[in-house]
Image 1 (cartoon, rainbow, N blue to C red):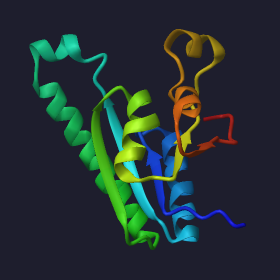
Image 2: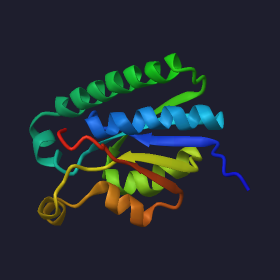
Image 3: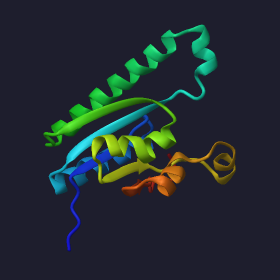
Length: 150
C-alpha cells in the first residue's frame, strides 16, 4: 500500500531549519498533489509582561509573520503548487502545532525543522520538535540540516 498525503503542514519561524522544512514540504506536496499549509505561531508566553506596556508589540510581530508567510506562500506557488494556505496563531507553539493547527487544517503530515539546541539548552527551555513528536496525532517528518556549519 502506498501512503499518500492530502494536506501537508509545515511549521515555520524564519530560521534556516524551518526554511529547509518548507522546501522539503513543497516537494512532498507536489509529489502527493496535496494542499500545503504554512503555519507560524507567535509565542505569547514571553510577551505578557512586555505587552502590558506596549500593545504594538503584537501588531509588529503579526506584521512580520504575515510578510514572512506571504513570501513563503509565493515561493510555493512559484514551485508549482496551487493550493497553499497560511496560518498565523498566537500562543504556545508546542501545543498549537501538536494538536490544534493539525486538527483545524485537516493536516495528515507535518514537517518541522530540527532545533539547533544542544542537550543543556533542551533541558532548560525544551525542544518544540521533541514535544510535538511526542504529542502529535499525525505523521511527522523532522527535517535536519546535514551541513553542521550552520
